[in-house]
Length: 156
Image (tube, rainbow, N blue to C red):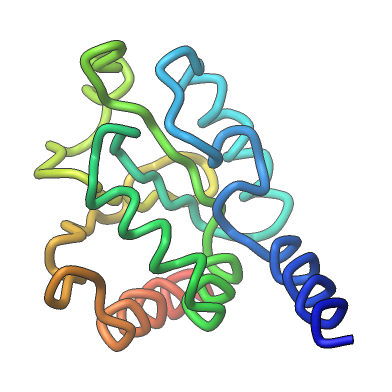
């Protein structure tokens, strides 16, 4: 019985994930068209009244995996992000530096790096994720503050 309950909770929780619920926010994929992904994210953001959280990184990036594990492993943070943002991952790697796409945004200062846009894709802020770190991971309190800041802006 315990196994069944755990499986059901895992399925329900996976349906709420802000990360990985769309093709444009699953794995970092050098073959993806970031311009098309942004257009899809804009449509989703406009339909849902959300902002767009663009995360620059890559499968090669240890901290990118840590941030994903942190978000997915923390339902309060994951749900908060999902409530405020449409989440878009953009690959930046030796296989595809995505220079043309990246050049339209503020300077990426380390990986992972967040750029926040309105639902039309207009940049309204950035977040160096290093400022959200705590030890070898991420701070729940710092992430809550990050989400709260953007939730207030989203509500305007």
